[in-house]
Image (cartoon, rainbow, N blue to C red; front, top):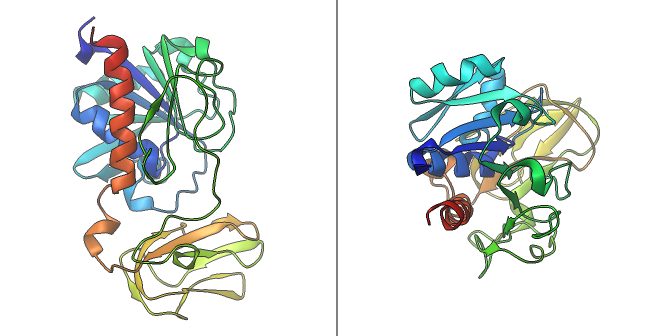
Length: 266
């Protein structure tokens, strides 16, 4: 089969899933992304799941469009766009019969993906064991092995610590102080200083810990739980980084592309 006729089903359409989808789209694979009914992406400007709310979402010139049935896939592909469908359990795989299934939900556990779901099944990050759940695991932890294709075993354990950017780690992230309704005061791309109020959960303020530019922020009106990641600040202050795929996303996407080519480009 020619490589450009391969069909890839991606479970999830958040930031990392979208980075992979972008790379595979640019490599001329046919893609379908599945999502939940109310996605909660933080870096929304880089996430195709926003199409669930807005009908379409563009990331670096590539457009994803929400569809409601498998019949709509081919017309969307014909327009050079990525179809996204609300299908949390990826039941559409029984209709699509993909050549590749990628679990990019980043749930830190396996929510039902099996090695029998497609000729090639790939999992991003922890929660999968290559050779048992999936054919390959892609390392998602920052560091020396980021983007590595693992054909036996599992990815590195979750550190629970956000990656370091310009010397800051956990300080970059702001979290919901309690359960409630998240209401934004700022938007992605805004510059903030330490202590600035960026949002509220009901009547309680959510403040930035450091100065920089808001790179991620939950949608206004999102229902949150205490401690939930609600956004992040990039201390480098580069507005372009809010709207372009990250180095981490590109490395992981490269690993997925390697896994696909090593299986089918023979």
